[in-house]
Length: 278
Image (cartoon, rainbow, N blue to C red; front, side, top):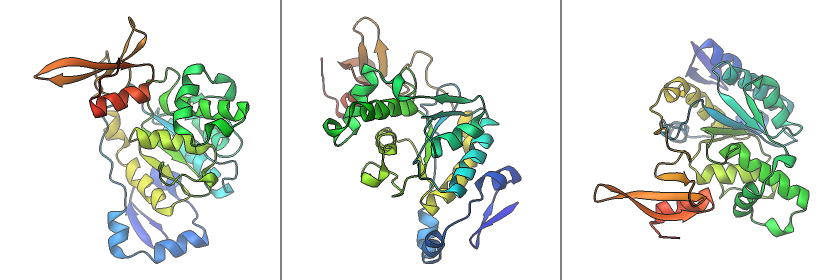
């Protein structure tokens, strides 16, 4: 069937209509009305299935405590929609966006709190916060628990996409600002790992999310990584002997170890740059 969002018609099904319809505010309407035809075509998100998927799909559902009521309602309905597809929510239990997602997710959820922060998650969070040394100890724990929202309990199983709301509409590390708030750490991490980010503050992201919904079942069936892959990233595995992440690349048709790192983030950099770091 067809659904119209501010005079723009999209093909969808009834379930998607129920979960995707969001009341746009006056600024959103003005923004969409002023878009050229070229912009409205080429800025819609195009998603390709990601081979890092491990077992069930997972998403981070997070955001500001100041999220507007209409968006909170959408978050709850969208979480119900995803839960019915056995897609797991990762969130932080905070008032506002987090609780709205959690309300709709039912039992398909992983909720992380400040008390769950570990030495390992803190090391990762520090790499993604621009003013880490200025944070209070409690704030550091909050940002550290955000790491689990993206990488999971074992810090080696990334989510497949992120849905959020922030006051500034941030959807990348480059657009992060003081108004992004604590959600910024998760957004920066997702951006680093090339994880799709849908910030519901941006009306175009809402349209992109509708397009993404059409791909979800196809993505769930996509070929999974090898069973011995523990990082979710090809060529990076946990080495029990060294207690570090091992990085390997193919050289002359053979798998060659090029480095080790305590940090999964740094291991990915080693792989990308081809730098030996032992």
